[in-house]
Length: 74
Image (cartoon, rainbow, N blue to C red; front, side, top):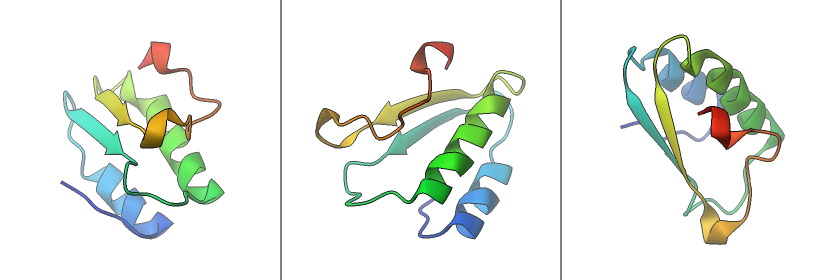
């Protein structure tokens, strides 16, 4: 399990994810998500198919925080 407060820690966490993993991104306690964090998540999602990583999103109050990400491809 990884918790992060900044981009560097998030990238470290992403690099530690092994192939064939299931990742849950839970934003239910987030009041704000910086654009840099969203970009880092989008970059990560671009690699998940190659590494057979399944990603599940838990969003805050149904608000689409990951705009621009096609969850059908996850």
